Length: 79
Image (cartoon, rainbow, N blue to C red):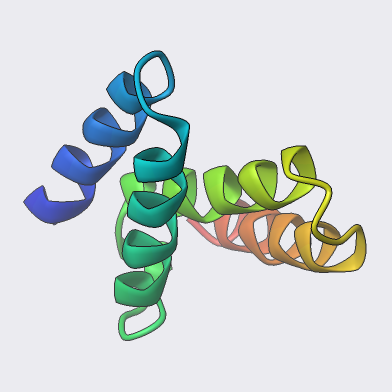
């Protein structure tokens, strides 16, 4: 689960410097999370909700971020 910790810290740092790289890193991390059970890692849940925030901030969609946040809240309550 060290990957998700590093990915979360990387995205947190990229917020201030390079928004395009931040968005690409978020989507890459989101793709990695899809291949595992995210209830085993709190960092994975953070990246899942960060993806929802990035999609909502970019005004790409309103339904997709809501679905991602619903999934992450269910994962939080299942911990």
